[in-house]
Amino acid sequence: MKRILIVEDNPDLAYGLRNNLEIEGYEVDVAEDGTTGLARARLARPDLVVLDLMLPGLDGYRVLRRMREAALDMPVLVLTARGEETDKVRGFKLGADDYVTKPFGLLELLARVEALLRRSSPHRTTARLPVYRLGDLEIDADAHLVRRSGGIVDLAPKEFDLLLALASRGGSVVSRLELMREVWGYADSVVTRTIDTHVAELRRKLADDLAEPRYIITVRKVGYRAATAAASGDGR
Image (tube, rainbow, N blue to C red; front, side, top):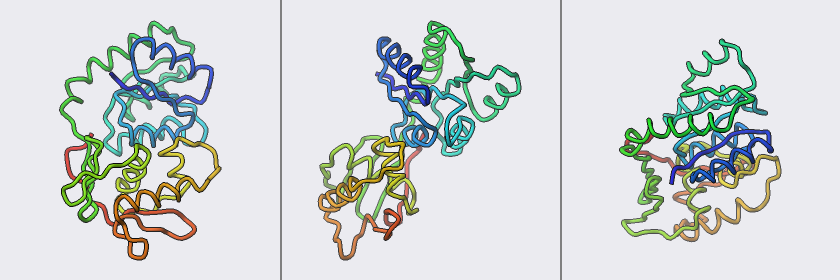
């Protein structure tokens, strides 16, 4: 099943698009702002992104630029209320694959989605996501598996996503708020003990010594970082 990410801050439009795309047989995820959308695109690697340009915070142009800088090569269908030629050209220069101006016809959008997925399929079937290594720990993003000393570590989906979010940053510090947005999709500023609880359980399953952690390092009053991470594989 093809996976589509919709990045759209208008809840009514996002709901309508999601319903119609799901009726067509697609698996659909929705992000309501640019920051969350970028994080979901990087973690979930959907087959196509439907991206609104006029987003709160991180606008669609910057989301698109950062996606391409991060070698996220899935097709992007841009949605915008703007119709000026210069805006279209700017979108294409940043890496957009197609462009629909609001208001648009649903049948037209569905046809464009189908065409983009059809064109991209041969390329994407051969691509692999990176494999990250933290000492004797191996995080295979493509297979969605974690191995330690050759054995499989049984992680819950959110635990895997949390570990991947840290490992993919190459040792950079990630705040609790960033992790809440990236892994749980929370777009507000409410930070709970959810992150700390999941990190504690993740450390337990990885046999990561709290006194001398090898994989996940606590950065006091900020968040967490992975021990120096290395990535291999072709990526996408």
